[in-house]
Length: 384
Image 1 (cartoon, rainbow, N blue to C red):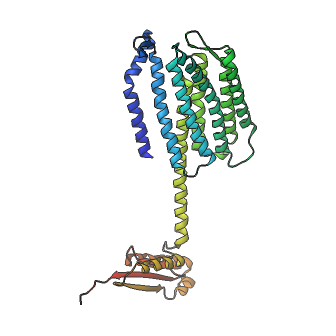
Image 2: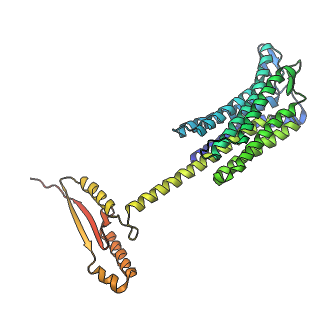
Image 3: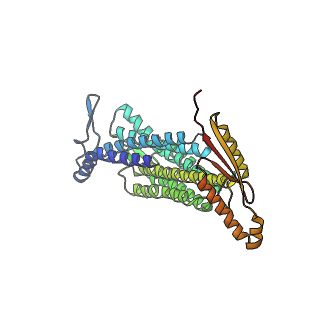
């Protein structure tokens, strides 16, 4: 886990450091509106103008695709038994990669008027909206699988999210012929349609239903999982509201991807903590099953089991000794001074036996005041 965090921090540092000139160029572009010269790219014998902002989007989204790919591979490798929840997590990562990839294509082909760009910019923008709605269904399913605790009956909120996704995709198909959500001008530039806010309202309503479902089943979740899933709603909602009011960067896509990775990192941390907790509980139960509660020595059953293994490891040149110890007149001690004093002397004898025997030797409490010890010693072979 520590190595993963070091890698992630180093990766982000190198990413931002490597793109520092690009960031400075974006800031200069936004201040001075020097749009064309700094970011123009030659293509096919002519010049196609790409703004610095478009270069920024493509660069960041390509990095995002790489990060999502790493996360998807990590989820796939780390979970040998693929549950439905695991498959949904992988599908969400794939959806994030497709979302970033199609958005990058829309920025790459914008403003270009050739036939390839004409179709690519329409396909990519359609895909961005469509994947957003599909991702909303994936996330709702993920929330339900996390909070349901194997309940089979799906809540109305989950079915409503599915319905909203279908409605959004149907309206998106209608948009291709009517310009409902968006349209393109003669220069292949994207513009918002009169009902663009409706597309965002569908997404916000779907997120709100997921939030309602999460809060309704809050009692089924650990605190860290609940907080990590709650964090998912912050960035996408803020980005959606901002993007609805002012169109500049593709904040919504980036916010969805960032929030997804945060949620899955926290989920991985929680799973790791749960695994260690279960492992500790197993070790504790195993220790209590093999050891005497009063003295901490092996109990009778575990003692015989370890002794058999102990003697099986001996060869013909080893010597062994089995010692049986009990406390004389122990019943008299209990009857005269009480069981508290008797327990004290049992623990005292056990402590002395620990000092007498080596760490590799076997000592067990055989009965009430009876102890059993096994000791072996390697004997040097003598020549004939």
